[in-house]
Image (tube, rainbow, N blue to C red; front, side, top):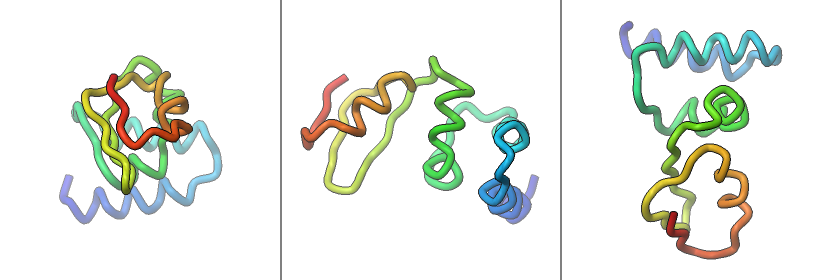
Length: 88
């Protein structure tokens, strides 16, 4: 799929309000990929955590450094942490 097609599909799924359709669009968009970053991943965290609860997650929040990785189930706890650095 050409990069512009992927961008167009990403924009379409971000507008989708139906969770089942949005998650199916995410599956199609990431089919064959082992990793994703930035958009639409950052905008679809809730869906992706639900879809792949055992996935390994690495992320960066402005002003926060994370060393190592975590699984998707740890993501919510990590986001609420007030620590500037989390080791997992």
